[in-house]
Image (cartoon, rainbow, N blue to C red; front, side, top):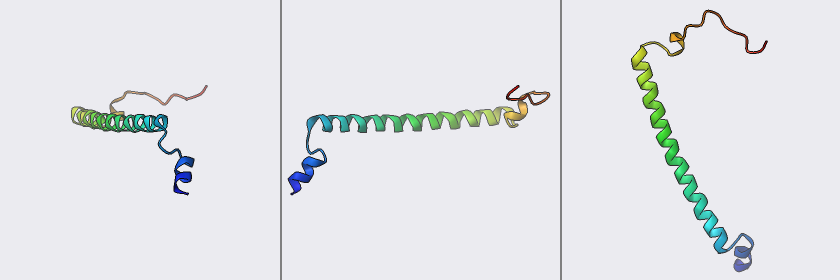
Amino acid sequence: MAKALLGYVGGSDPRLLAEMRRLQQRVQDLESELVRIQAENDALATAAASHTGDSLLESIDVPQAEPALT
């Protein structure tokens, strides 16, 4: 019975194992890139906050709001 269940869910098909490894590596790559981008974003936010002393939005000179749709 265990062999039947193992075969039913994929078993040890080399193609499935290779795809699983490839996907696991892709997830690890994306997670590490996410950590890198978050750190870069934090550094940029800190630099922007210390550079202006004000909110970034307050430093934008817009005399009046413009409509999104005309």
